[in-house]
Length: 534
Image 1 (cartoon, rainbow, N blue to C red):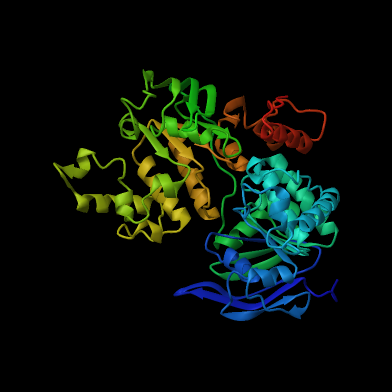
Image 2: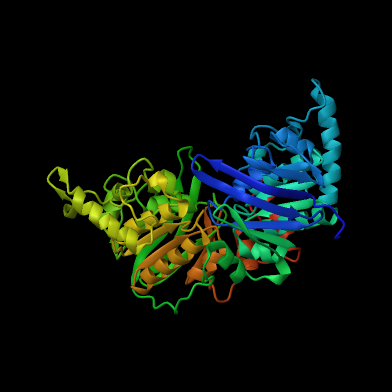
């Protein structure tokens, strides 16, 4: 192998955006027929580096070599011609086109599409058999599950004869079984001599599936090591620059009285589709009730109803007193007045106003509190002083309350939202995707704050697509699928496989392989059939 040229070699790559140096003199070698992981915190420069390799950006300086040959990549067409394919975190598919139409889009053989489609059909069949990339070529993208859409992106790259595949956070929206199937596909591709670059923040994926891993920090490459010769703890320290506690350190819960009681809750969206289908559960003081599930299975609608952002039917009570679900007598303002704090799933759309300052964002929803106002006037000086104290307590960097929210990184924006909601000392904290897009160091802090609130006797409803997070934080776990609760599990006795099957609508483990059962269940849902529960 020592005489083999790297599939990719980057030498001295630098890229700046104004005063921000995104990449600083980066060099990296990726050997052919390997899965090479790249990890780093938000803003470490991973996406910029891959965008240079795929022709989206032009490096200020440095050289790119493909299979030992210096190669200019001014745009994505040049990258494709060089045998590079990229599967983005947010898929680049035309939703009302079929699979085969998406595959040939931009790679047609001429003005007449019929020959191109016939050629693509034949190629798709071969690729599906070779790499377990089964997908109906005539299905519309909008009718496919996220896992199947991802396969289409991989098929697009392989149809264009890519030998090098870049995947950006590929498992962020997949069930565990779908993720297992994806990595089986990647393993098949590696065995066929393809080269895979895997960008992920999940250390478990790095440790299980990569051959080599490179770590980036603040625009620089800090280390490249063989995966078998490192550990999650070492990689985390290389990413952050200090030791990081990867496990959640907590004592057993001591649940008290019921704080939130939900009975037969139903939620219908604006199109008349029932998103939450008669669910019931209780949460007690001093416990974290985690809800796992793939995004889009009713968790968002549940959180919005509880937070006063959406109406529903059924019965909800807080500390034994009923909560209005019609929106006539209750909204987010009245929910907060009753002791419900809400950290929404999407901090940009629902948690912050990015063009407002940090101090203004720290009181949104609580701005009518007499503490901050005197008649029609706000006591801005007091609010700014309190905001600075909150930012210090929650380690928001930089701790400057007069900066606009958009000036902070994703992790620090999340801390601003958490500071606002947690510091109100709520009876019930609704927290959705608390560490989405957050650096590993900030994840450690956020988890500690959630546990602290639980230990102070607060009730917490946690919604997360990250199973590691759900299992490590929760005292009880419920799994939602298709608007229903599939069941509850004890985090001490369940495992990722069981939860993953429930996330795909399967309540009992079938005799067939888990990934196959999940695939059949998702296909049934896509075609309008009843899910095959159990």
